[in-house]
Length: 310
Length: 310
Image 1 (cartoon, rainbow over the protein chains, first blue to last red):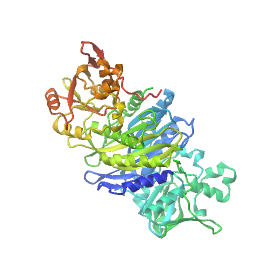
Image 2: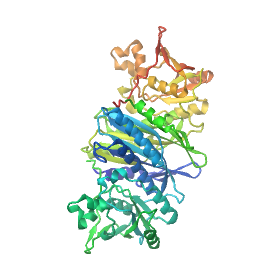
Image 3: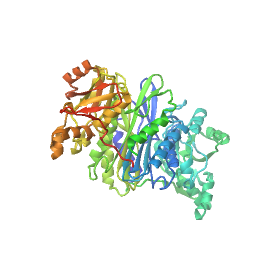
Image 4: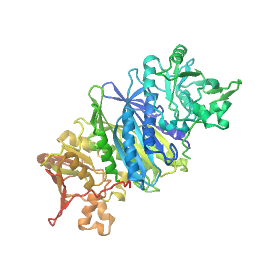
């Protein structure tokens, strides 16, 4: 049973009767809650586990920062402003106190650097690998929240930055695209948005499914990160480079859908110094495709990261 | 390094410059955030780990419910109303899909039973023991939030229900005292409140430290749960029974401070069918004590549950 299957299962249960204050529930990057007279609050939770999201021996500073940054990337995907985070940490019982203190400081410093101060937490000693769960609380940006659900046939699919090879180190050092998302949301009518965490292929499918349409992406338009070439080996050549960009994941870039004129404007302007690439189109239909330079049209499959549950 | 030490360390870092919107930060049962024009939102996060908070082989229904109920108990301690929860689950990679589905359903059903629907989550497969992190979001009750910090010299210390022996099963089946806390907060001027999770001794010390005073509790006034007698053995006799009530933890009852007349009224009325016991007094000073029936005055030490980090 994969992560997605379990989330789909719970989502099915939750869909039965959503309360009136729940504007967005399970199935987007963050939940959107109405509180009081017209205020809205976003919440999203994200776990990183030693051996799955970072290697043993990774400095605690990098681990703490990644845990915070990942949760905030989910707020960026909704074009929200981070307010704060709470964090739960599970240490191996035998962990050196100096390591614990460094991790605690890292969580605090990352939360401050990324404008979402740590306001609460829990610490547990256990038998298992180091794990951190960060829950981020946010507020809608000035232009409101952007969901995965609003892509329209005829939209162009855009992506910020370049993708692939994040395992070379970017997965620990990225800055979530909060400012970029807010900038885009103020200037454009973003129909749908998601962050690239599981991998472009998987995240495109999330967006397509949520919007109830199909996407066609052009392999030669997908911006490949120099880290892919740096990986070396067979994967650093030709189509394999694009497959890295499609499937490696942990890029934490933004994928979004705009009308054709707006997409072209975004591609011209970029966003805060980062390139915006048009990689495909949205159309009616339930299947999504990658078109390769030789004309081959291949069904898009979610070959990005899946945390295997069984 | 104990859990409390690490939390104190991070709290020290966080105290440097709290943002204006942060009404209550690290160091109480939940953070209180001001959002928009006068709204306030509470957030608290709590992790349960197999082998630490529940035994291997515990049915997933009980595990899921405990994870939700624990987080909501922290909202109860602030006299807040739960709004919703988000949950992150770490399974062992080899976990049976049927177990995963039962746990997912349990989280959803417990969240609905306890009036805090699950609105988001994360699922990770890893090498370690099963763990669940639940973050609860709440809103202040009609009478506002109650902190740990407001106890006054001369206050009487009260506790709901009876304590000790929760490991016999109550730690899995308790209902957080949300209704009780709201009821008390509407009728009384609660100076300070905390829930009994780590153990009465440890939680009394949390409250005393936060309020900057000392507490004196009378051993013979501490309500001992019948589960302690049912434990049998030497612990089921005399003073040892009271030590169970002081130190076992996971009772999820409420400890609160009221003026003397209000405490006496609360003890007379009980709360929604649950007894309220007056167990001690607050006074100036930094040390807290237990007075035993033979007149011995023993310094109160936090011998309750500590998740050992090292």
